[in-house]
Image 1 (cartoon, rainbow, N blue to C red):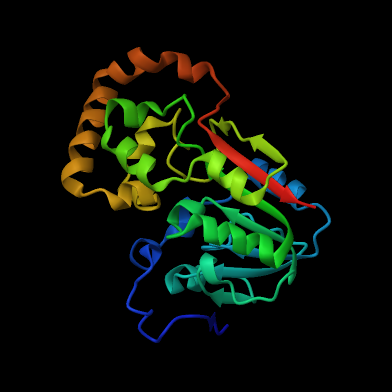
Image 2: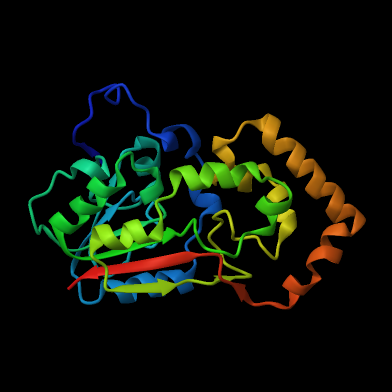
Length: 259
């Protein structure tokens, strides 16, 4: 299907979206988790028409609605199975006011150059909004980044929009937590908190913008330390308690706004 482009020249307007570089094979690792899908579907309520901003490969789009996928990356939209696809940025959505019953955005706000403007656009084009994001101010941190890759915290603090900013920009009325199940199928960065060996897989790491942003000179030594700690049993000695847990709240939140 032809992808409609809005606000892009043939060369991408001089700016190549990050996922044009790192998005190949994304769908193999980032498989929608049915529990998160159900949470998002419930948040959309009775909306018949939905715009998915920062849609990527189409994760979490409800199958029983009319969904329009919007993303700045052609690589990601090429992997998207939908029939309504528009190449555009969140900050400049090419739709009329109130064009959709609902707008959704899943783990994408931190990639927007101007999150406030993008969130305002969601409110402009829809009567209801559902935004899944991560709160960088949440106290419980993932062991991997505390013990092996602390460089991530500086990166995440600089690029993730605080939850308070997201809720304020949307005038949100509800914030729902999503504790990460130990067997979550979507391979976002905290997904493997009880499956540490997964972080050794370069394919898994490539599907996370966190890992893809950092240079190999930083990531590879951390992976080597984790590999050795798994081999020696040191990781298990430090984190045996995690094997008894079904889920952990790492700060992932679904923010709801509108009617």
